[in-house]
Image (tube, rainbow, N blue to C red):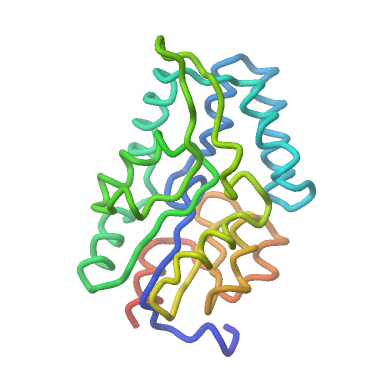
Length: 219
């Protein structure tokens, strides 16, 4: 544990995919298009999360390949809810009841993440993700390309602008989460679903369960 990562935090920034929930949303959507498309998109996601290519380079490409419909995004929302990390709902509610500010900051699809936030009691205003656009009949039309969350360092930009109550702990599994590190007191690599060595190596802390997170934040 680094000197800046002492226990006790007033705010927690949570990633969603492979942290709060046990899936990568865009990869699941890609899987609906068949194994070849699924493998292609998953490979792009993994390279971006390991920091081997910038998220900027693949964000729009993945959505252009998949073109998820509104109905498919609604299916993903249900899957997010059912794949919550063990204890996550209880822990997030405990944190909020204790006065801790909990925000979700994700490069995922906002429309799919909002139902998860509602399940956890997190207001829509504390959900930061990328909105999609659909045609009148529910077909994919585009995404908010102006969102900083489509870029490699976008999460850092968003978190810095939020001016959260200090001390702030960011929690996530990927390179885009680690990018938040310069603007918060500490970054915890979450390894409950996937372990990315490059992220763990540069993290202040490592947590595998949400119970560990609860102990860390409320100490």
